[in-house]
View: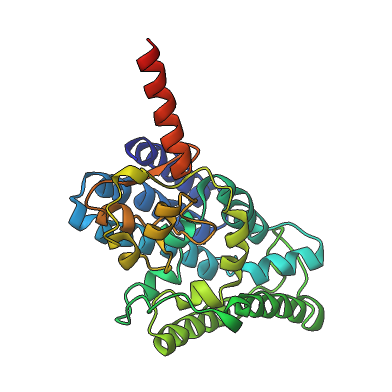
Length: 310
């Protein structure tokens, strides 16, 4: 984490200065500066924090990272969300929404999983402050398909702006001609209204992430093969269920550890609550390939057999 922190400071802040004084994108410069603050200084604070303070530091990283993305959208009047991505695809042009979506939603999750959801989402930074808890469990039935509604609404909004309202690319690639802050601000307001209303209705801070977020729906698939994940040492698990009780995504962490299967499966946002809460240290964040419980025992048994032979 300290290496990432130092790298972020050395990369993001100089880039912010270059963009500010040489470019014409104040919002992007602000986003780069805030990213250096979030993934630089605050990530270092998380690394050194006591276990009972780590979640406070993580939220600070989440809030500043999310605020950077939000300021980029509002100040430069550019839609970085999935509907903005669809709009650029329909118009056949490149732009910030294409790069942002490819990095955070398509390519990045193959390595880092859903880290954006737990450490840099501008919606989640507000949702995690709502006094509504984490829900009583993952809802089934029709709720399994409601994220498709979010994707459909995003695509419909893109069609509306690109084909009906005739927003066309002009000037800087990806920035719509006659760009105004108001359509972007309206989109932000709609997202916040839907996310907060769903959280209050279902008494679940992350209800929007689970049941409606279009980006979250895609991340459930692109993050499944992620290298960065919460791994486990099955033999150290006592079955206390502390990890399951604190998971904001209602993942049955302890049960998956006992069954020896991958914990995340596209739902884990890498918030580290389960890792910090585990009293035996059976959970950790790792880039190594996760062995099943049986695989761990087989490996341990194989090493033991070699030692006995020797």
